[in-house]
Length: 396
Image 1 (cartoon, helix red, strand yellow):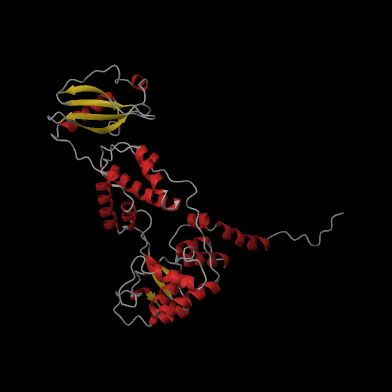
Image 2: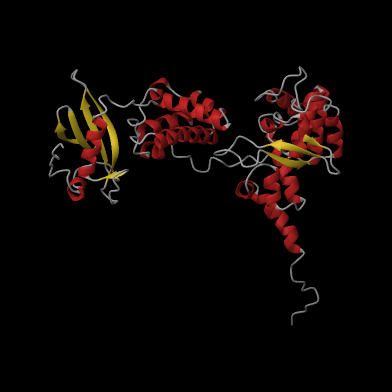
């Protein structure tokens, strides 16, 4: 068994904490071509191992957090002696472990999303803004400053909300890599460098009156029956276009109150417990959809005039044209306005918030955060009926 190395500078936490904060680690030699280093951080330090490659070069890899502020557990938090043991164990592998780049992390995240049925747009959004230089960076070597510079560069060309959606997707990819690679011991660089921009998620809350919604639907039908059905279904169900595009013929259920079994969105983490939710629709819409149900049960219900399924953003240009024809600003009134309007319509009609959230495949928290003003307006009406009546009271 190899003899443990000694180092007055690194053996104790008090000695390590007297070192200045620095990116360059302090090393102690463990044996031929093998060294153990300690990188002093603002928070807990990091243990790293260094192996010479025999060609006048070496590779360095983080292997764990130092027990500067937490007690060592032998796995994630290591004292000086445990760090030596781990470095020797890893070194016996004979070659350095693969150092994963950010681009490789995105590839693995895409594969994970595909397996889980997640939204692949999360990856494409990041890739469309990723620079070659940052994509080649190794995950365990990228700094918070580099990630912050990339985040800030995005803010020059896109809205703060888009910046947050993009950085959130990249953080999810990096966290997935850290979950499966025990040698990525610190997430500090992206937790700090990719911090969200505060206040960016204020929804535009474009709410249309029922007359305005009906006008949009009428213009959509003027374009084609297929686009009209898509717009009417979006207005009545409040579902996202991506959900409506996955409806099949068998999802139309003709009960006394007809309904659609709307597929769950691909937003959020993990697999959805409920894959389809019943959403009530009007008899008028049900009648128009019934004309499409002569096809096999698994056939897509809502299709384009060509007969092909609606794909992502297929509707955007058509809806912008319809909005402009109705006198709206197409950059403000998008298809999402139909969803906003559906949610607010139900809230003001007295439908419980939990029921509204379930029917629109979202959470009560999101409803309350995004539509709080409309909830407050409705609450005033409800509370007014329960107020103490002092009409007959005549003060002296």
